[in-house]
Image 1 (cartoon, helix red, strand yellow):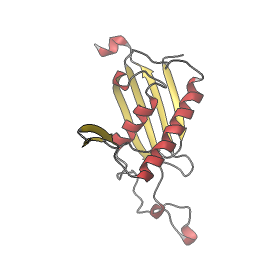
Image 2 (tube, rainbow, N blue to C red):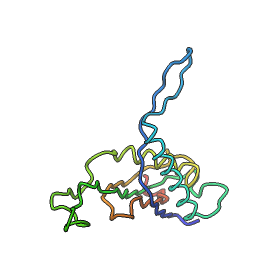
Image 3 (tube, one colour):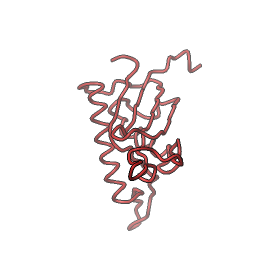
Length: 160
């Protein structure tokens, strides 16, 4: 396997919120945050990322990146809300008032968290290996929602 892997994922990027511990019967229990709808969305994102990663790296018994420093770039492609599009004779065209960038939820850090967790043990052995990242969030053309993920080994001389 080369020192760069690019994965193109089609689907709706889903955030992973912060879980918390709660005491039940004197024992700490992990409670995932988010609604059941978000959990379903996260499950769909998990499947889409895993399938795209498997297509990119092929059948492997261990992740291609083990024990090395990594750089990851993720370009999330988000769906535009329906209110950004014209209606009637302007159907299919963006309204002039439609914002250029998605500055609303989901937060970029929560999208990143979910994606890193999904890729762990599939493409790399531990997300603690990621020493640098470039993450963007942009609106997608309809039907192209998802993410392009590029993972590369960091040359050791670049870390010192």
